[in-house]
Image (tube, rainbow, N blue to C red):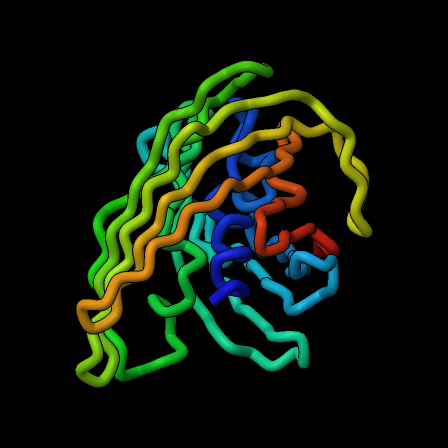
Length: 223
């Protein structure tokens, strides 16, 4: 579960800063981005690979289809998913279920119902800006077992600018913090979670790394 949660926030944070959607890696056709997942001790526990399978523009809105695959620390594939990201006049609309692998193709006996939930990111931002809250609700049923996820992301604030270096490069980034309240209910039994997340976003490129109490992620390869 920690692996899924850490990786989720690496993806729901991704967005475009400039008006040109094409400069952002998730809007470049056939682009592959690999992010390494770390636990709170800094040890690698897996990786997430994202591949842009198509990019289309209609009536001024650009839509990218993203295929993702998660691998554990033994490099065994454990989840796959396909989602979309939208860009309209420089504003990014990130599908909040994008990195919830249960909604993907790893279990043919599972079905999911998800509210239309997008996290918005403005075309421009500055330190001190407050970003819009976001929420998502998902119901999953696997072989008769029902599960629901309710998530609220609040207090999204652009804190400052920092330089970030990973094995994939060096970027000048905006540091963005947020608070997440989540309740995962399985067969009627709820498990609440509350945690803070920090992400570093490079204008015109995307999210470079994330951190939370459970660990974090960082881009380690771009192809």
